Amino acid sequence: MTDLIRSVSSWPLIYKEPHYRGARRCVTLARIETRGGVVGWGEAISQIPEAALATGLVIDRGLGPTLVGEDARDVERLWAGMCRHAYWYGVEGIAGFAISALDMALWDLAGQLAGRPTAALLGGVGATRSPAMGSVIFDMRDLDRTLEEFRFMKDAGYPILKAGWGMDPDAMFGQDAARDLAYLRAVRELIGPDLGLVVDVPGARRVWNLKTAVRRLTEWEEFGLRWVEQPLHPAELDQHRILRERTRTPIGTGEDEWSPESYRHVLHAGAADVIQIDPGRCLGLTGARKVIAEIEIAGVDYSMHSWSGALNTAASLALLSVSHHGDTLDFKPHESPMQHDVVENPWQIADGHLTVRDSPGLGVTLRESELERFRLT
Image 1: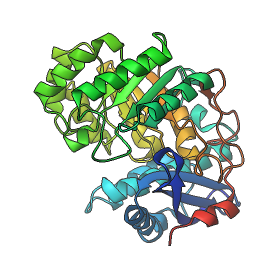
Image 2: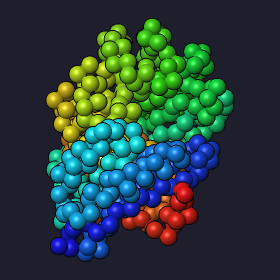
Image 3: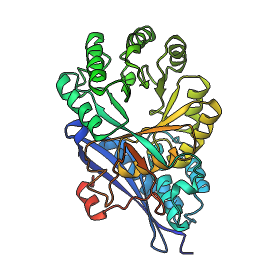
């Protein structure tokens, strides 16, 4: 009886993101406590205030009450029940955030109740140590500042370096061919030929059409990019496939997907070489694990889009350990409130890698007193 769920609550949080020069960003946490007093935490990358508050409402008044009284160890059954409960308004968008946070919290609980790391419960067969991909935002108005970021990541020991989008909506990576080339040439010269380099094009903003994307990726072959992320709008799956056929640089996409069903469309279209998965968005660890099973069948790789908080990092590491198709995970190179201030044991890279912790559950200890400082009401 002590493993039955006693309470479920949401924690919408807002903070100033150092990687966006202090811009306000949000996550929504879910807290689940059993009758025996064991607490599990999960995270949704809700990003903006109205989404964070709406996610909290769905957790507190919709999905959370369906979990009270249930066995916290029965994660997959509870996941399926939450998906059924949300059928009328769908499991994408706000409901997708809510299910993601709750499922992550359930897996955290399941690991703690079993006395085992969540990664072990997921059936990890791959490496428990994954290369970290230092990820920053381009400053397309200040090359020197951008190079400072890459120098910092190189000196910190990241084996893979990534930048994308732009600090200013009017000056984004991908908008100016000559400027993009100058940036890539300067970055590659700075970091040398051996470090992995990934660039993230704001495809969701439709900065390129297919013809432009083919031309740009062909021009960029000299830089040996590990992959180019989301070069086209994420819904344009057939055009992603054609782009793959006409160019040599690997293509990545997937961070905007929500469910195993939507990822299946990406895979069946042959739209990408590397699939980005975010457990704080795509229905938690249960949803992500189902996606990984499809990825293995398709024979492509996946990376974890974990550019938010410490819980998401923990979940991403666990998911990388379940398959040999796992590649890397995004990781913020500078200290950030959701990675440092609110946890007792922040993640740190060692020799350019992050390692799954051997403590029960996700291995992240939150400081509830600190969470209150960031609470969004």
